[in-house]
Length: 76
Image (cartoon, rainbow, N blue to C red; front, side, top):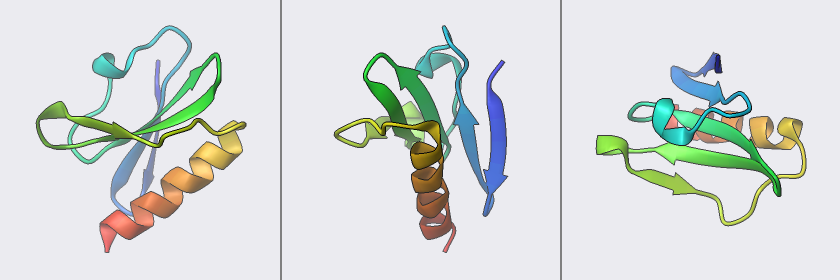
């Protein structure tokens, strides 16, 4: 089951192994997903559109820190 953190009214969802992006996330959520090449940060937009950074982060901590900074910016 995915883990959800609320940061500045934005949901940051960390997927568990085997969960897919389409299973989780609603408009304005940020989703963290670990794949073979690292931690990806995905932004869920209106209607379920997905935008992601170009490269993954090496660690969960780096991905989470970036997601929190993006949540702070989005909440303003």
